[in-house]
Length: 87
Image (cartoon, rainbow, N blue to C red; front, side, top):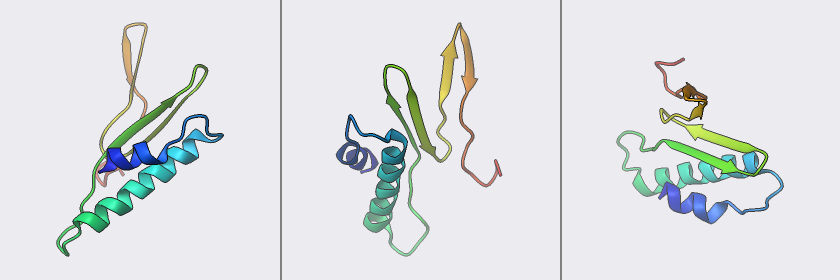
């Protein structure tokens, strides 16, 4: 469901990729809650999305999925988990 909504929402050539990523993730969150809420618990998912342009990369993430950068044989984490333990 999250992937479907991201694909429906994101439009190549947009002037603000980061705003589009944020909006798409928020829409997906609402759709998941509406589709799966049964009164018990809070459904959700983790998301990592990257919008890659020739000269820039925009990254958005929610949850405990991570983004890593591989450069010159070295791997470095570029995000922090969104969870209570990390806070």
